[in-house]
Image (cartoon, rainbow, N blue to C red; front, top):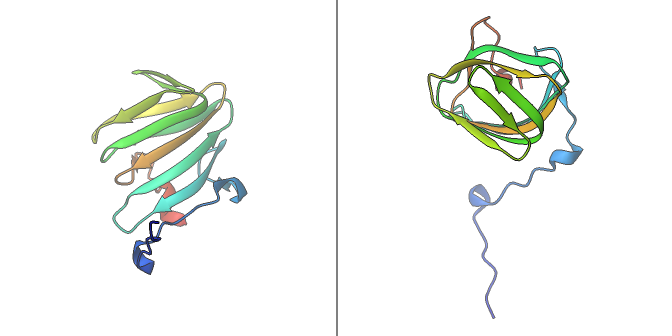
Length: 126
């Protein structure tokens, strides 16, 4: 019989009950979020919900960003990522993202995005 593995407290798994977390508003109309993870290095994992017609204004990905689309679609000048699909953007990529019919997606950021209108990144206020 195998004995259970006991990790030290700082090495234990951290379970997040995302379903019970309330949606938080953002500085952008029609965009809500649940911050599932963030750290002092700037990494974060965020669940986003965009209402139909919502727009993420011009921003730069300062490092790798990865997004898995759960529902709906996001589009920009480079293409469309629809439900069940994945997109990643390298650092330096700039775009405006639109959700004409709404969207639900999970994004992983290595560092915060830079918004050109001066808005702070989503994790800066929480």
